[in-house]
Amino acid sequence: MGPTHTLIHITDPHVGPPGGTPRDPVDTGVLLGEALRAVESSGLRPAALVLTGDLVEDGTPEQYRRLRDVVAPVAARLGAATLYAAGNHDRRDALREHLLDRPRTDGPVEHALVVDGLRIVVLDSTVPGAGYGWLDAERLDRLRERLRTPAEHGTVLALHHPPLPSPTPLAAAIALQNPADLATAISGGDVRMILAGHTHVVSAGCLAGVPVWTGGAIGTTLDALAPGAALRSVSGPTVSRVDLFVEGVVATSVPIGLPTAFGVPGDAMEPRIAALRARLPPGA
Image 1 (tube, rainbow, N blue to C red):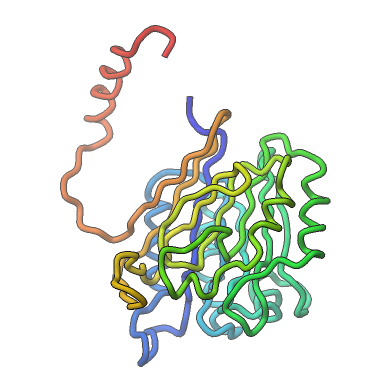
Image 2: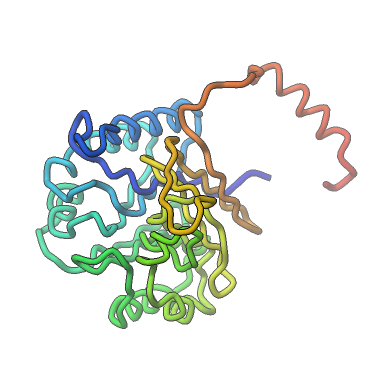
């Protein structure tokens, strides 16, 4: 039986000016466009696109407008809702005004949406002017209040800073500082999965019995085997496909732009797959 809901999780696009910058000539806006085209060409019709922070590089209005120009047309063609979380590179006021079309304020950027019975809650784990994350009592109280009423298909929580240790020293130095408080807030609720970014490393773990998925970044991936405190990154944008089933969840990291090693058309694969299914034990 297939998934009840599929989400596309995108994180850390760090969209900057067209053409990149002298410090970083990689145009992440172009990479984000390539990633979204790959999603669109797959034939998937995800329930939502969930972007978990560091949406732009410098928090400027121009960068947010560029991000929206890349994402919004694809989301419209897919018929997918779009949810944005703030990251430590983002500016709350500019994000609200130029991406969300909301009044310009400096408060936490938080919202929730129910899509076909699945509730997606966006938390703001940022601390203005700092790289690390923190969830204060007020934010956690709002989350508890949301979770008091269960959603039909449960809740997916999205935030920038993952509530997990990081394998890279740089990310560990600017981690979420109070994951135990988040664990307490979601304990006993209907949260089925937590989506995050920030570390530029694909990671999976668990918090209070809830799976946590840290997606790969659009721009660069950090090498978790770099020696000591060394920083080493590799090119290779990724997106995550998140499938929610009646009885479980699966997150899959999908690299974008790699050369195809081999391929078999769908119409040739379908009979092979059918033959394999025919050999399954009864009731499987």
